[in-house]
Image (cartoon, rainbow, N blue to C red; front, side, top):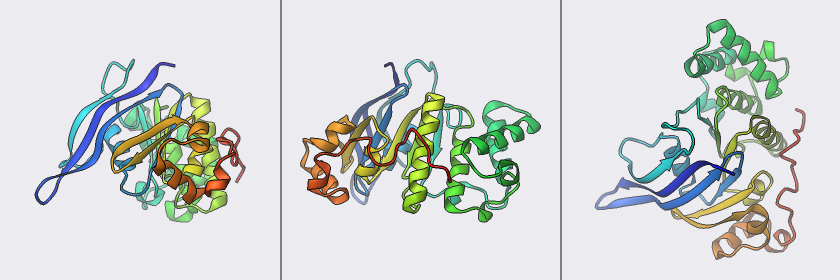
Length: 272
């Protein structure tokens, strides 16, 4: 498969008291068109920094080296149009005083140049696609009237307005309970397949990531320590740190025979 995204020597550093603090250290990673890649690691491993670097959302004091290339695009990738981003906390990404249909419509107007009426119609279609009950009524609701899982569905709808090449889900299910988490995982998997998008799924939970990823990349202290097919990483890791992650989330004995796509079927959604 041709690459959707290619990272070469990507490093991110921040000014410290006396020296630069390294958040990412010389990352080389490709994501193929339509491929699902999970980034795994503990807090502070560089996972979210990688996502922000790809989306050009790093703070102004970040010092970046290396390249972020989009083969076949022929230009710099644009957020909303080429990159869809789903954050951990949907409440932080939604305007609390704006109806959710209008929020999605604004994204459509900004990235697709649509008129207001067409953008609102698209918003209702997208709310239906993410299986929000009664999408026409839901479009008139404010964020505080929705549950956490429903708000995350709205955030996903907004992220796919422009039919992006790459969908980044940064800990998008970690704030949800287990049942809702399973539903959102299945929803993301279904939409990625239907739209032919690539997926960058970021999580601290290697067991969760194995349910949706084709490949898993393991990060530690800003470095890529291991990458390979999900089944291989889960059943036969080569780095001791990966073993520790597996033990933390599965137990050493439990992971040895796990199917990398067992548990939640990310290709068929559970109805809410």
